Amino acid sequence: MGGITMQWKQFFWVASMATVFFFLPSLAVKLWETLLFIPWQYQRWLVYPVVGWLIWVLARRRWRRMATPAGQGEEALLDIAKRRLVKGEVTLEEFRQIREELKSE
Image (cartoon, rainbow, N blue to C red):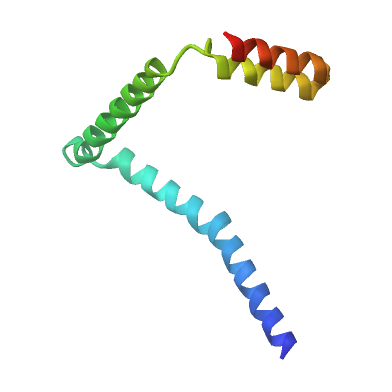
């Protein structure tokens, strides 16, 4: 019974690898060729939504970057101190002193 289960596992593993390495790239190439060689009147239904989505993503990314502080907050400074502690640039006592100074401010 165990041999049958292993055969099925191997079959599904091989099938998934074949899907990833053979089917998906050929589908991408076929889609690319289709988009290149069809007339513009049929392409525009895809181009305009993609451009709109791209503008929306870029605007959202910019909005989020402007909404977050520039990293001058006390948490950002504490994170820098933690990274330096992990790297060994700061001793544990120095880290505790930095943390206390940040809490007192």
